[in-house]
Amino acid sequence: MSKRTVVMDLALLLEHFPEPYLAALFGLLVGAVFGFSAERSSFCLRAATVEFARGSLGPRVAVWLLTFSTAVIWVQGARLLGLFRAEDARMMAVTGSWSGAVIGGLMFGAGMVLARGCSGRLLVLAATGNLRSVVSGLIFAVVAQMALHGWLAPLRQELAGLWTTAGGRNVSLLTALPLPESGAILIGFGFAAAALWLARANRIGVRVLVFASGAGFAVALGWVLTFSLSQQAFEPVSVTSATFSGPSASTLMFFLTEKPGLDFDIGLVPGVFAGAFLSAALKRRLKFQGFEGEGQMRRSMLGAALMGFGAMLAGGCAIGAGVSGGSIFVATAWLALLCMWIGAAITDLLVDQAGKRAPA
Image: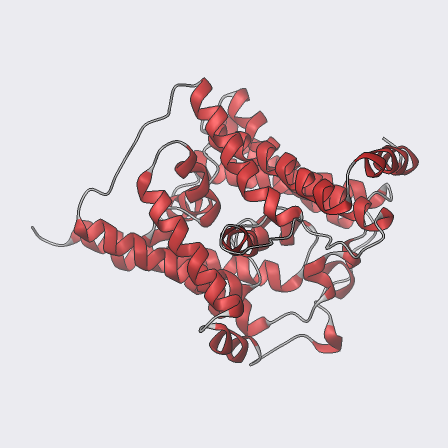
């Protein structure tokens, strides 16, 4: 598909839909693709980090790597074709926070182990009837909103301001390293090769691999659609993709305000829920599940709170920073992703593995 074809098709859509409605529809579409694919592939950063921390390069690591590499390949391919410019992305156009990436990434990593799922995974599980994920997801959204505009905002701003990027913009690894024009997409293919090697070693079926790739494709789809809309719209449009920190907070406020606005973020969360629900319904995996005890509830609530604040501090969640930001080579997003892995591994070691070793 050429850039001219995309522009023409988008111009026709703008004749029938107001810009905010079209942005929300794009969010709904991207969310549905991601939700359906994530439910079918069991994509989850928490599961991958725990598997890795326990010395295994198993199926969860393979699925995560394939999703990540697919996002990188599609996004960088779109960039080379002129369908997307990473420098226009919202997370690239603002000042980045190195301190926020480290502290927030560690907090998010610890939180997703305690909550037994990252924010995106919680949303997918909530759509299948997991009431634990519903409660944790609501706490995540409330704390994220508090960190964005509420009581926790001053603390977030202070921590984020400890060490920031220079020049009022984030840092692109493509120019900082520097990488050749095709270097980024070659990195994506390298990750894909590793993912497919692990998939073969763990005997992962083709269907799972297809849906793991689908989750990564959804990220690229979000970048291209919002970028294309920003080039045609009369009003400013944020160039963004799949993430669950800001959109979760925005969706919460959408239902709590009298005259809510529409944008890509507002469509994303319902889209993920709908896609995951449809996938689970077709596979007859819809089942109500609750907390197994008071201890599990306390643990999940604490984890969700840590993820909510950590995601806002780090500039994104496991999907927003870890895949969407990583696919456009935002330096602070890669640092946040690394710290999420470290925080998750340490928490698993100190909490879950230590608990198993403790005498009865």
